[in-house]
Length: 339
Image (tube, rainbow, N blue to C red):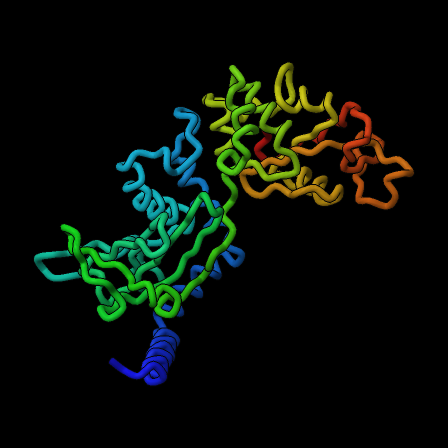
């Protein structure tokens, strides 16, 4: 056994050498830079992961909202869905075959004429890498709905960085000590669009889901969860109906009409709605998201707080002490999908 000081020195030198090798791997850098250029803020990538998890949960049909409610086979299928949905979003070419003549392994993507395999795990470090991928690039993807976090990076598969395969397929995993220095992380611990139902207090979630009709559940969702982004997947799970988005629209008994009487508006991912949210100082919905908030007509006691003009009057975010008055109608959406 090496003396402590010498052991620390060896480990530090090993990390430096590994970092230098990573920096000198031009293909790793090229692929990482290209993916980043397609999605500089990671919003598209994060949305794909959110949509894929919601696709697995299938809340519209099942009412499920948590990863641990999935069957084992569904969790196993998650990697395939992530791979497919990322390819659809970013239009990556199909990869080629690698490995021996008798044991070919088709790579998932071809990016800048470089073959790349895609590996997803809901457990950080749980990526299962086939022996045939040795020496090639892997896009490692992790997402944890309970933490609302995700990461994606490029790994050049090298034997010395992997644990030995002990499963039937002899697939390998990345050693824990190399999860940071051996991977070129494009995004690390980025924000995953929130699964709102999962993160609500049990009493609030129960109050929403115990309503007898899908329409009432959607109304209760936007009444109880205000100034917080709510994705389509959450609306779908609350409604449990094929036409779940219709539950949001103006109309007798529908969410926007009912909640407007309580002073609550629901803005969607449309340019006019987003501008209203920005001007009034509310949370701004992103792609596939909606935000509800209560408004009050601007009065002298509101001071110089942010405000927006609707229907010829100025409105601010309501304080708890502000009286409840009917909220204004939102402007119609033109040229964008309306909800």
